[in-house]
Image (cartoon, rainbow, N blue to C red):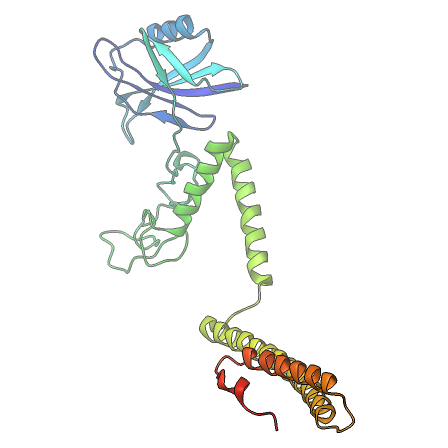
Length: 289
């Protein structure tokens, strides 16, 4: 397999940067002069990096035969090096995500201009006409109210995401496009299966009211249980009071027994008074009969 690197280097004071096609990584620095022979550059790269250069070519300006300083270098291999050495310089490679390529005839992102067999259209309105465009802007790709070259176009943004996926996973553009469409379909299916919420505020208020009602019902049940337990305790205490008072006033009871019963009565009265947070200690000194 071949690994493609775009290399911009430094020769005799000139600056450079690199790019490779498997993942499209770029390190912007400076240019290689167009006067530098490609054979000399290839020999330097092979000598300093231990690789085999298969092909080298310079980029051309758009719609012009004039050569530019960037050089496209194709080397043998399946992995991209982390750095490259050139004229005593060790430079690390960084990721580069290329911009979407667009046909200059039909302004589609699916093919280049040299293989397009369609009629040239206006990029502003998407219609074939002669002379200045007098119509409203309309994108040929998404039918939005903008021209076909707009970078805010959803189709352009989608192509950017596909190129980023291609770069980060080191796959072909076709594989990246297939993975992107598959993930998009899964997301759409998930969104469709989610329940529709017409008014989030009303839904939150309804859930909050339900929660408050449940808390109120539970509090009322707990209070009812507590009141029942308190009533049973008071009934038991009253029954004991009645028994003690009855035995105290019984003429047949011995003085020792009456004294003991009276002591128990005072102790029980003191216990009840201590449980009353708002009660008074004077209740202990009150006569029992």
